Picture (spheres, rainbow, N blue to C red):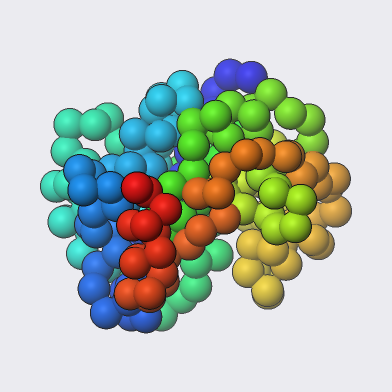
Length: 196
């Protein structure tokens, strides 16, 4: 599969965390946003769009020189993550595209192998799975992206995907990081323990 784009949504206020999530270190070396960019790059994804909002300039500085595209959610303090996803999709679809990978910035520990498995699997919507839960990143083929952009956004991306009516493939992965999100200080403590 060629012409793949990754979208990382990083526009939010990080209000539950009480600090700015995208710039938090996750393994003592890199920030959450750097980690995701590096993982996508390791998996062979050369086009990466980061949707910014709150502290956009700080994220752009953090990722300077990495060849990342930025899309700005000007209403980040008023709208939902679905809106950031749509902003990223609109920018992604300006170029020739077969599929997109989508993840929020607060799921930084997924593996490059998980991305590769999603790329090699079948299905219009592909979600990494441990047999019990769905994780990140998601992979959506172009027709699904177009359907999401036409959707009302009620119920977020999950609701939009359900209404789109395309088949969903749950792709088995051996990757605990694909199922660990980071919203609170307690989540961060567990994240650091998992990274050891």
